[in-house]
Length: 66
Image (tube, rainbow, N blue to C red; front, side, top):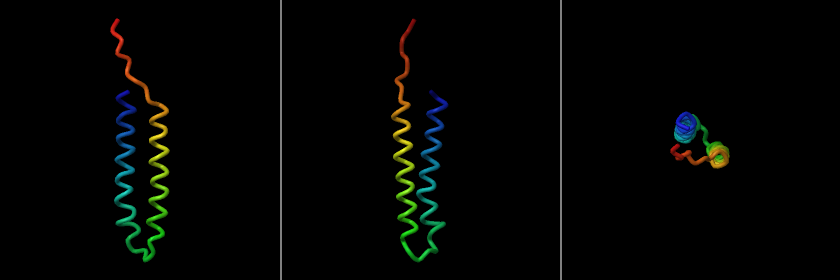
């Protein structure tokens, strides 16, 4: 459980960094806003799919004491 938790934390930190650096640093010299909006649409789809995968794999920890 601990390994998958840190994987998803790392994945969403990566998505957060992409969300900040791509539009404001990489796409800043493009005079049209369409590049940023296309990026954000794709980013949102990846984030939603990631959340869906997390919810599908969700398991409660086994707290049974034997």
